[in-house]
Structures are given as C-alpha cells and as structure tokens.
Image (cartoon, rainbow, N blue to C red; front, side, top):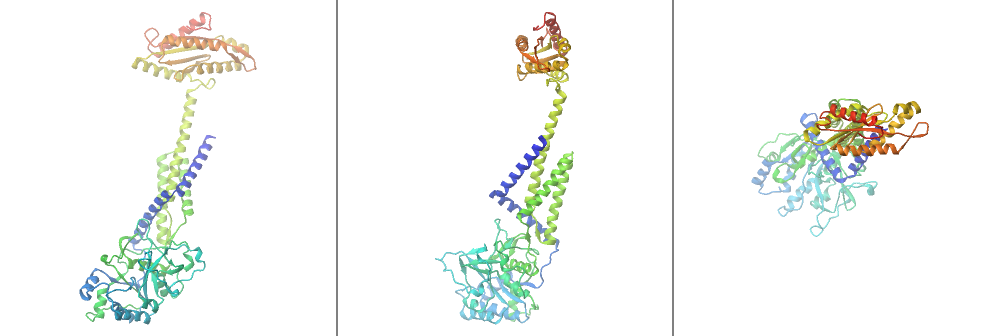
Length: 573
C-alpha cells in the first residue's frame, strides 16, 4: 500500500511541477533561450558537415569593403548615384537574369539629382524582373507623417481579423517614381529573438490594416513562376518562418561591386554570365552596418539573410518546429523509460548509464531530424522532464528502500509477541551503554522483570491468555518509562529495562513504580475474563559493587530478581 501511495504521490507532484513550470513565464523564457541555443548548435553542426547545398542561381553583387573604398575614391560620395545603379542593371540585364533585387532602399537624398533618380525609375519601368526594398517602422508622427501606400503593394488575406503578424505604425518610403513604376516592392524588416540572434523571418507585415510581403517572398514567387511554398493564409500566427542555413557568411557567390563598376566604366572586362540568376545587390561591408548575428555566424550580412530566405522559399526547406505538446510527449516517453530503468535495475550506476545513453540517443535523433527532415524537435523540455523523472523516481525508490530496511531492521531487533526489543538487541545495547558509561563516567542501571507464577498462570488459563498477559505487561512497562530507556524481552516471561544516565536509587524508584502499576491493573484474558498479575524486579547499576561489564551487571540484577522472588514476590530488590 505504501508503495502505491508513494508512486501516486510522485506522479501527482511531478505532474503539478510540470504544469507550473510550463505556466511560469520566467521558466518558459529560460527554456526558450536554452532551446534556441540547441538549435544554433545543431545548425552549426549541419553547416560544418557540408551536406546542405545552396542554390547556385542566387548570386550577390556585394558592396564589400573594397567596393566601398572604390566608390568613395571614384565617385566621392555614399550612397552611390542612382544612375550608376541603372547602368549596372542594364549591364546585367543583357545576360537575361531571372531577377535583380536591391536589398537596400532608394530614399530621397539631398545629393541625388532628378536626372539620376529618373534613370533608375526608368529602369523599373523598363524591366519587370527588377525588385527593390522598403521598410516599415514605428517612428512618431511628429517626425514623419505615416504615408498611404498603394493597394498594388499589399497582398490579400481571406480572414484579416485572424492574423497576428508584426504590425507597424509608420513607413519609410522610397522614391515615388519607383512606387508608381512597379509592383515589385517588398519589405525588409527582420525578426530577432530575445538574445538578438536572427532565426526567423516574417513572411508578411501589417501596416494601416493591410498586409505587405517580404522582398524575398516576391523574389521567390517570380523565380518559381507559381505560388510559393508558403501561401498568404499560412502565416496567421505572425511568427514567420524559421530559416534553414546553408553556410557561414560568404556561402553564396559574392561578386564585388567594384568589378561591375569597372566594367560599366569600360576600365576592365567583366567575364561573368548572369543568365537565369537571382542577382541580389546588398552591403557586406561591416562599416555599412547591415550585419546580423545568426545561428551559424556572429557576423552575417543582411543581404545573405535575404538570399537564405529566398533559397528556403524556392526549395521549401524552412525549419518546422514541433509543437509544445509533442515535445512534452517526447519528454514523458523518455521519463517512462527512465523510470523503468531505475525500478527494474538494482544497480544505480547501470540505470544512470542506460538513462544517459537514451538521452544521448534522443539528442542525436533530434540532430538528424533537423538535418534530413528540417524538423526542430525540442531538446530542453524533453530532457528536463526526463531528468526530473529520474530524480523523482530515485527519491521514491530510496524512500521505499529505506522503509524496507527499517522494516527488516525492526523484524531483526523486535520481539514479535510483545513488540519489545528482543534479546539480541538487549545484548548489543548493554555492550554499547556499558562502554559509554565507562568512557564518559555516567551512571547506568538495569532492571530485570519477571511475571510472578507465570507457569502456573499458563497452566490455569492457557497459553493464549499467557501471551495476552505478556503483551499487556510489556505495554505497561514501555508506556511508563522514559523515551531514552530501552525495554526488552529477556526471555520467556522475563523482561529487562536498560536505564541510561540513571543511578541505582533512581532505578529502584522506577522499579517500585512499575511494580505497583502492574499490580493495580487487571489484564484481559483471551476468554474475555480479567485477572491480576504481579511482577518481581531486580535492580543493578554500573559500578564496582554490581559490576563493570554487561555480564556482571546482568548477573547482579538476576541475583536481586531471585531474592525478590524468594522474599515473597511482587517486590523490588
């Protein structure tokens, strides 16, 4: 019964602990943070293994450190004039690329001339595969009046009230001429985790009750010539998509912009074929501040984040995160295995080793689930549940073991009839108490007790009544001595009381009290009748007179018990 109770208690406490842990905000934040770290480690391992290949059709015209220096030296300013971009677009378009996308915004500038801006605007009018970016923000209205964007830039949502995507109150618009010239304008807002690492990208964003797509979404849509893998109505929770990384910074082919600039200036020949390529223009120079921290790299250009996003959209390789309930289920399964090991295996090191082996195998499986199936299976919650289960069941097991040990010890040291300590325990305690008295010079006394005429009583009333009398006398003795006194069954109808820190005179007083109490109480017999019994008691103490060893003290007490019986019984000697 106790085992069932303890296991029921364990399951109840464990379930409550699990429930409150999940509900507790700070715990959930900690678990989420740790889980993100496990995601980063798995992504880094996969990237380092080289098994995941990026799309070779995605190339980046990079404004790297060398290109930034070239622009300042040859054009004298940054940002670069818009007509220069128009010339580079014309140069690339000659190779018939699939698309060209700018991962930066062409906002108005004091240094830009109308002719320069018009050259770029004409490029957007001329080419329907040319894309550019815009950004939503939450700047106050006294800084910038929120502009109204044309409907052609938004996407249709079947049930807008169900969507909970990232919402912004303002927008930093680009050149109006570009907005009028093309539909190919997407947002470049990103979504960072609490630790500042970019793991997700929003698919759609909300502004003035309308929904606007990411730049990468419309670029991928154009590349596929069909509906993208993720439809508009798929992103209702607003969490966005979890990116699946292909490598460290520089994984995608980077073409330094200065080489393209030299080609359009006629300074050098540029031998590269852009046919059917997705060409992204973006900054990779750290000084231009478009640097992100991602799971696989602390310094990762924003344009490569966009390239990764487009690549994931094209091949449908976004990471899918397991729901919380499934991670809890995995944890419970691990916990059940752990409980089985601990309960069935007597050796705790073996049970611990098997449990750790299972945990390790589970972690490896989560790695391969991400590597081959793009599944983010949780590690922290399942292992936390499993480890808590291990600790809890070990505690319960040892509580039961401790109880079993206590029970076995009690059986080994207790007389089954009287529930007093048995003769063996009496001998052990006499040895211990005598050694203690000798070492610390403290008093010790012993009382031997015998029920008067017990053999005759058994012959008259029967052994069952005799056993009843033994139990009741034992109860009186045990109840009326101190908690530190040790009452034992010495043998047959004889009992003994070891009295630590008790002088002879005190022991005699206690013996007289016990003698009177037993004589004054009627004992119930097995046949329902009652009868009075008396006891005789012999008292001895540790010392020169009665002895300084267990044997001599017992012998002295036994002699005095004999004298009490010879002198009429029902007395102390």
